[in-house]
Image 1: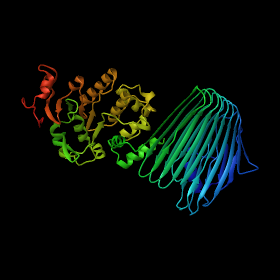
Image 2: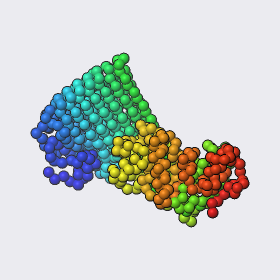
Image 3: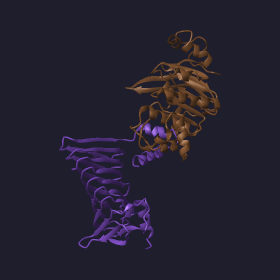
Image 4: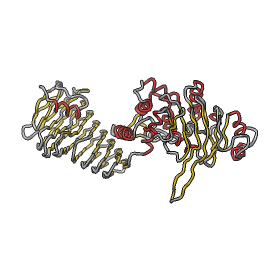
Length: 307
Length: 252
């Protein structure tokens, strides 16, 4: 299917792996599935009772990718979608999601993506989610993702979320239940500017013995934007977790980081750290000693911080 | 050629003017190595920062090949050909060592060149390339990466502020060899702030700074005996005037 220039541009921004109408994919466009394909090991089925899809990933999927981007170019659209992923035992898959809004109107445009992952025993999942907004309109772009992850024994889940620009408001909810010997890696990268607001609430429950979680959040707040992070690691068994929130604050922005650790077992080892600060003058001077102007140096620092 | 004329730096604290350095005069010929040494807190790092533009001089002239660089900002001085290794290098969360070297070089370096640069400062190169320049590196490792960033590009003038600080003996030997190599090739002028005898003995010229001003300045052959041989070195550093090495000394 031929996609228009706006859709292609937005897809380039949210799917850096390169969206192709090949293998397993589903492109949701302005509230409806525009095109989709299955692979031998990954089947995508439209839900009967509500908006969204069920994605079935078989054990035979090893190193495969499935792309499920969402593009909205209709100003004023309120899109709510429920996607469920069933990942069989020992499967190894990369799921590339993400939502991009091109808003050329004056109406608020919103996408709420509710994703649930049922991760089988010893399965390995990398989930990449990029959020992006653009357009010459004055209407706000709002993205509210909900991510629920249920991890069985020995499974591994990497959650890599990025929100770089153009999203006026976001409220993220992430809920994770971890089985024995399961491992979770969360990397949340966020940049807000102007009057944007971002709230991220996360609760990771380490219920199984030997489970471990690493939760890292890195953010940059510019202008008068506001960010609140509240990651919570709950240890209900012998487990290990590390929660880290790092933020660069600029201009008149506001950043609030509340890392929470909550142990219900004497063998739970949970550590948290949080740091908020402006761009370090020594960093700027070092990069300027390479011949960069101050603005260039600042851009490099932010770019690398969010890498 | 670098010429420093009556360099001064003052700050105002609580309405009171405080002189940090004053009457600093010296020059370094192309390809020469000048070592600046002297007691802690004497003003050596301030002079180095004034040369690079990390601090702005409140008086005097800085001539690089006859052009007064004093009004230039740090990035303009970098473009004019000055490289600078900070005494206490900053950390960069999210930035890999490879990326930092590329930025320092102003171009994408091959993996082999990155490895050579790190090897020259005593780092087992490949394993470090994708490490972040963050707190997971030790102080000595950060220092060696800092030096490698200056070596990543050809400069007219390289300034190293206490390159030996925090570096183990083995890496220090590698570093000395690297300085010897640069010095031998005479392609770059070197200014090193150092307390290390091994580095001081490599110098063509030595500048001793104490209490914010020049205490001694001259050819290595003249200053070395005053620092390390014959007379008591502290007494020599403390004694002003005499032998033509007093305040405002010039090597012309």
